[in-house]
Picture: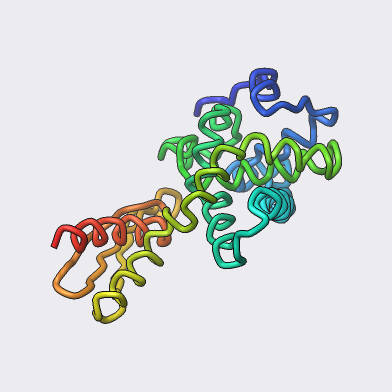
Length: 230
């Protein structure tokens, strides 16, 4: 099993914060698969729980201040997009967070260092650790800076990446019944993959992902394309 990289400085530089409490940062890197195998430490799940709240408030404040006249529904859609798994996973990849993670053997062998769900959860854990290490003001400014570009895109076109909602709205506009999703899963627990088939009107589309939500979003995206061509 490959060992995670130990040089944290490139990550700290990219994030824009050098942790005072290195142990706290390292805890954010401990995936539950690693702690289950080693029994040597707690996982990053509590930090992830905290980081989710810190992230949500930081981005809510940024979106609220960026567009004083934008209504609540659009703000909610923009926030949901910015804090989504795919956006957080993309951020984690840009910071090369995956190379630092502690993973169990199963997750390591199944490509866990590049899984959207693992990367997004670890990014939230880092935000939780950042809040505990430096306080709210520093955490807020850091989060708003690294997610600023994604927030701008989301606010310019709220909900544009929420393909399930867009498909439902498109179906309603065309007088079609609500989209129907069928789910399948395959593989062992440590590398489970999901497939979704969505039917709406005469259109049927499929999508795959590492979570049910991701698979449904992928299927909905395909159905939207098909409906827009018809």
